[in-house]
Amino acid sequence: MPARTAYTGSVNYVQILNEKGAADKRLEKKLGLSKQQLLGMYRALITTRVLDDRALKLQRQGRMLTYAPCQGEEAISVGSAFALNKDDWVVPAYREQGMYVAMGVPLKFLLMYFMGFEEGNALPREFNITPICVPVATHFPHAAGIGMALNYLGDKKVVMAYTGDGGTSEGDFYEALNFAGVFNAPVVFIVRNNQWAISVPRKKQTAAETLAQKGIAAGINCVQVDGNDVLGVYYVAREAVARARAGKGPTLIEAVSYRMGLHTTADDPTRYVDPKERDAWVPKDPIARFAKYLKAKRILTTAIERETLANAEDMVERAVQEAESYKTHWERMFEYVYADMPEELREQRDYLKGLER
Ligand SMILES: Cc1ncc(C[n+]2csc(CCOP(=O)(O)OP(=O)(O)O)c2C)c(N)n1
Ligand SMILES: [Mg+2]
Image (cartoon, rainbow, N blue to C red; front, side, top):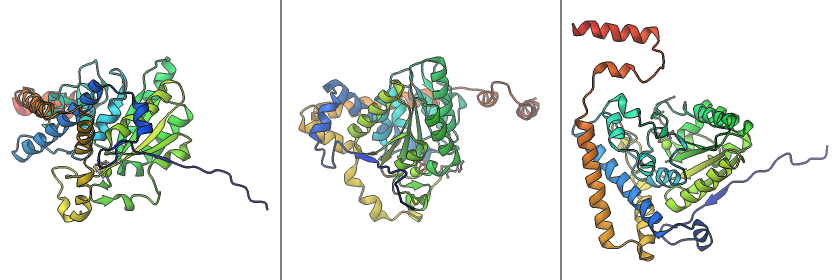
């Protein structure tokens, strides 16, 4: 029997800024970002980190419920969201704080959600962002479906969906990729590979060498990027968005990073993370790296740095005050899951109403 190769595949890796903040000149030229746009990205990264740090403290003070911090992963959601138009669709998981900042969503909504108000998920209508999705990867088929609907309507918007490395082990993940591929849906699937699914390390999730190559089986475009390089993430996301908008179908982006903090505030990583492994990622910090780049270009000065931090702190402080002064009624927690409330929820609501009397 003569052997022939039925298929060979490969996955490209993209990095524009290395750890020292030096740029790959060839790719840097292709970016074409203005000074204002670069500073906008920097502001979004700083705001995200300030917000994240504040949320963690609020939780420790008993002023917030369980919270999923994003320290170290900010460049993924900021860089990718910068490639979107304001009215594109976003289908997030629960660790994409930078996306909300980059899309201009008032930060009080995110804080309200983590404080336990369902209304935090009911964003103003100008945003096409679906609610935070804690069940792992169950939102991926929705993202494929939204993409299919956009095709059907002849609407030129694109969909960007996020999950983690652990999410790629779920059936929903493969089903979504398959549908998006076969229906040529305009979806950019982003995998935030932070190396951990709670206490399960990336190596115990899959025998695959990369997570990006999971797109190959679905026949979709796929690429791996340094997730701590905001310019690299922006670049691959912009290419993927352009492809999707031009009718060239979906892309799977694996953004390689590291979870510098806790899985959530209910987690204690000191029980399972080797501190040496985490420490090795400290010099790769996405914000320090981008700041070095901007300083070398004389775009970022100490004065702008200080002003950006102060503005971010003010903005977050105002959002905290708005979220904490929000008044609601318990009945509203029943309102945001179904368009038509099913019988069992109606029963629970009526039972609680009975207790009020
Ligand atoms: C379907 C489902 N199974 C299990 C869980 C419990 N759970 C919450 S987050 C998580 C790990 C997810 O890891 P990953 O996809 O890598 O995302 P990360 O939290 O690291 O951002 C698990 C198992 C869940 N929320 N949903
Ligand atoms: Mg993970």
